Length: 237
Ligand SMILES: Nc1ncnc2c1ncn2[C@@H]1O[C@H](COP(=O)(O)OP(=O)(O)OP(=O)(O)O)[C@@H](O)[C@H]1O
Image (tube, rainbow, N blue to C red; front, side, top):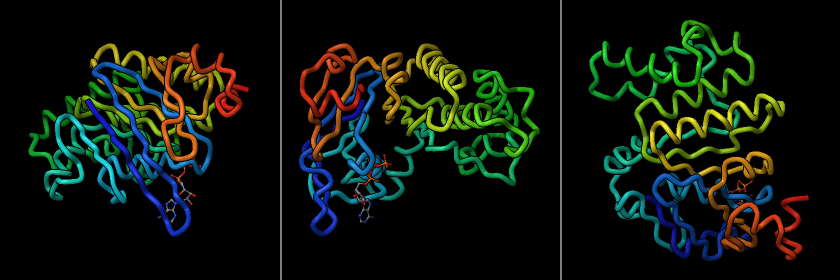
């Protein structure tokens, strides 16, 4: 579904990515862990064509991202759902309007848009909140609305940026369960950026640790969490 090869990016003396490699298989939940400032956002920006790397290859569903024109990039981005850090809902828009936002440039009849909004909200159990404003929602509800917005166009790949950050443990568990349900019903693949060890334990089919700008370690949660390597252990303490 997605492959990054030998990705390098530096800012002045700060060599953030030094030859990072990873791939995402179809139907897989891949967790990427890296400490703060390790380059996760830089990697995602390169992946989405929002930042030019120094060198490397990025392929998403057979398309080489770095070779694409703007319109082709826009087309590709539509096939990817993105759950932003902290939900990122528009405060002045209702839940319905927030969900319609990714549909605005699509040539979809209003009736069909209504159906997509209803289906997406139903899949996160929030149909009742359709006319509410974000200020009227709890943190967990906001995250669920953001999740509904990410999946509204039935993307084959969903990128989750810190999906459980800022949520209490029970709400975080609910969000993780929803992510699993969505993966099951939509057959989508997920790239999950998280610091949350509990989230990783439950959701990861495979994990990649981004350390020193490279894919320092890869494996299942059990394999990595039982590693004797101090740099790896630090994530699971
Ligand atoms: N546009 C930029 N110009 C200069 N330096 C940048 C730029 N974007 C990122 N960096 C630097 O790249 C490094 C990695 O940043 P990045 O935001 O990718 O970290 P992160 O792993 O996503 O961290 P966090 O978990 O805290 O969000 C940091 O040292 C940051 O200062």
